[in-house]
Amino acid sequence: MLSEKIESLLNDQVQHEFEAGNWYLSMSSWAEVNGFHGTASFFLEQSKEEHFHAMKIFHYVNDRDGHAIAPSIAKPDSEFDSIRHLFERGLELEQENTRKINVLVEAAKEEKDHATDQFLQWYVDEQVEEEDLFRTILDKLNILGEKGPGLYMLDQELGQRRAEIPGNSGTE
Ligand code: FEO
Image (cartoon, rainbow, N blue to C red; front, side, top):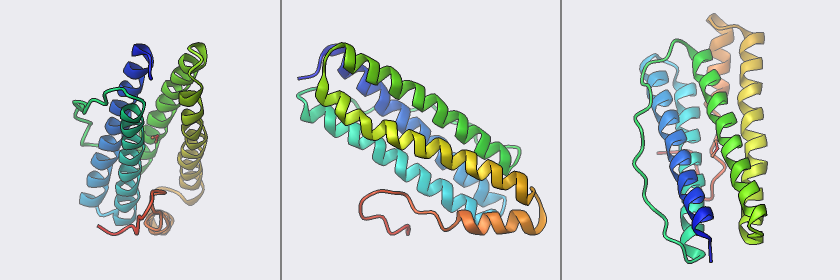
């Protein structure tokens, strides 16, 4: 059984994951209407991944005899300055999420909730990967440049990414 504190923090995390997913959906739309179809696909996949992250916690809360709450989700920005802006904002979102996961891990440890602590380790590892993913793309933007063939190449490459979720073929 979850303590009230852990249940509440986990429900907050469900909300954060959905909110991140909503940001990525908005970024996908901006990229699509601006002609960056690979980038649009990348962010759509990223949005699916956040949905998966949220639902994994959602089910965990109920499995532990808590009550998972479907959250209200804040509206993200819909306008962005550039491709770089998308990935900078994405990195910020991931860094924010890492901080929230760390708070949750600390709380689980304090309460000696070993099951939750162990459950969260998957998220700890995932955050390392996600931050690295966004940093790597920002590095590539620096190398390839933000216009012409370099940007075209990067957009093509970004379109290859598929969300790491069970049964995902990457098609809608
Ligand atoms: Fe669910 Fe991108 O962290």
